[in-house]
Length: 305
Image 1 (cartoon, rainbow, N blue to C red):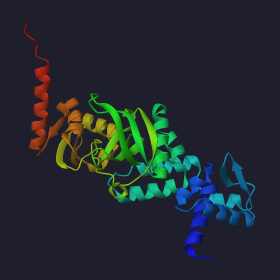
Image 2 (image 1 turned 90 degrees about the horizontal axis):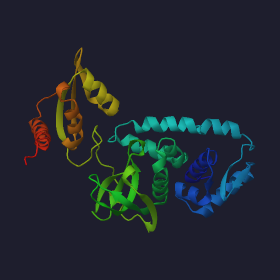
Image 3 (image 1 turned 45 degrees about the vertical axis):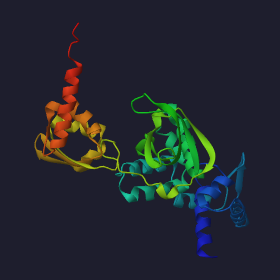
Image 4 (image 1 turned 120 degrees about the vertical axis):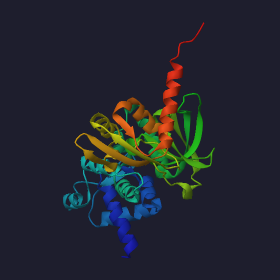
């Protein structure tokens, strides 16, 4: 047996021993082969003595198959184990290339939908499932009634969705309207409609940089802050990835040195703790904070009759 065929058989075995049922078409898509090839491989397993179980058009290896327990324990994680692995992978910095490679390997075998449903808010579960399905099939979607960040613009957006950020909060998409990759917040999507149109911009499907305050852009602005005990504790609670860029400089002080995509995210954090944070060697950010404080003061001025 040639090596590529053996590799496909092993990958198919992983899929058929996982804790979920898949259709032949779904298996073919995951393995990048034709449904006809899937049927041939299933026949190979059947001839080897494995019991193939079918349910509602889906297939898997039955637990009564010879050696099933030994094989399953060797190559299969339980759903709980897979979820823990996924959580660990999601904690890796978005800019680490290993993260996408690990996710791809995990989702080749384990049901992306099941993992997603364990951590996604129920209100958005259907939209996430639709996005996952479109990603698996390489099809475009329409984000129905997507609300912009300021809430003043609600309209449909045709995109090619290709990756999620941590905990499925946002989805990376190639936006057909703007001809560029953008992030869309899942909570702002009214509904997801899968379109009968295949991806046509796969080469552009590259997730961008997200800073520790979950802002994204092609711009990177250096930032240096000295934080007290309270602001450090809140920073780590709200933005756990910041821990890698923090260093303790005294009993009650820490230094944060990082790059941000914009001052909006870090600005909101600093303004809420302005008495416990000192801006170091960042004149542009200092000016940004001064401007924001002035705007707040101006808005609080009494209106004269």
